[in-house]
Length: 467
Image 1 (cartoon, rainbow, N blue to C red):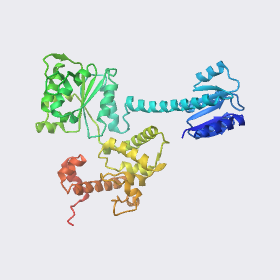
Image 2 (tube, rainbow, N blue to C red; image 1 turned 30 degrees about the vertical axis):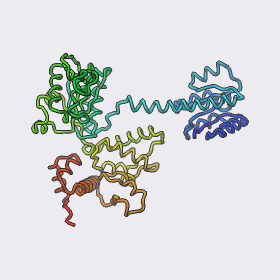
Image 3 (spheres, rainbow, N blue to C red; image 1 turned 90 degrees about the horizontal axis):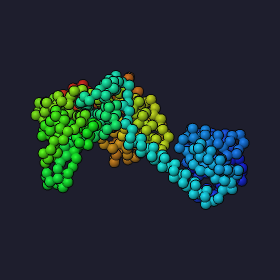
Image 4 (cartoon, rainbow, N blue to C red; image 1 turned 60 degrees about the vertical axis):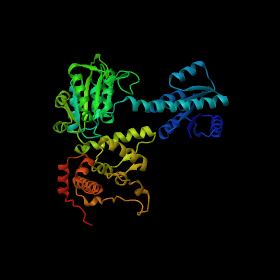
């Protein structure tokens, strides 16, 4: 239900407008002066304001200016018993949606109110969509490692040097690539992204280089490949470690000669493309195993940028979490929720196997499921580091049907590191038991080296239950 505010010093006008609008199922407040009207606008969220022009204490035009300075997207309909064309033009210039003379025509009033509300909704939706679609998210964090990444981007972006971006899944490799393009001399040209892991090996060459009609069974028409589409701009090859060896050979040739050939074609096409690549794999090990070409590795690895795991920069979590909190609340059209210091410390203690991507999902979950303020108990209830559902445990009293994650007694921990060790131990223990103590599978599952996992098992004294 849309919430409307009427500001008018004539009781009869306020009563008439209120009666009409409430009959149309609008939620209506009214006030008799502009000063108090402005205070109401600052305290409450209104979808539309109907404001008289000639009033005591504060002129309606002044109310309009100050209100729009505070809330630029709030639609205003100005009403006056002394309406002139000049007044209507002035109101329009100051940002009013429309101008209506007293006494208002009922049908025109309702149509104008409906149109103003529709416009307000469209403006809000457009802003959200533009923010989602066009803005490259900032690289958040003030840690030393993030500072070095930002400095490297500033130095490298204006050049045409190829960059290999490494790091675990969800750490933000794609974001680094986007900023390298945004700050480059190619920023006005396209950034074309290819997820090499998502394309079957038999189709990757067609995806990258295109194909001619009839070159294979399903090639019913000519296709332009990603190298051609990125001509003059940037090509980002994500998960390059999953690319087939035959495709690697063609990419190497394209990097060496700046020429490509479509699949099934004989003509060579010149391309001017800057290539950025990313991987979550150890490419040197992939080279040893025969899965990746050493010459391509050296071609790609002119500059290396390693994006650290979120647990390696826990000091950045408060800044990232707060940013996500504000962004998601805005997208949902709700007041920004507060997150307490204890809750933030609990977030910093989690293992974050999904990195920054997991933190974003976690904040969204907390916004939806918590009350006005997010507490450490909310984090414990909804963190779900083990992968099983814990939401029901926060709301259900049936212990027989829902597995509960016990909330630790925080008084048992002397410092932050003690709590972090506790959370890490419980997480690893859960994963080991889930995988029937298969260390190799567990290491792959939580994305760490097997030797590292053995060290953790020894550190925490974890042993397989004999029950």
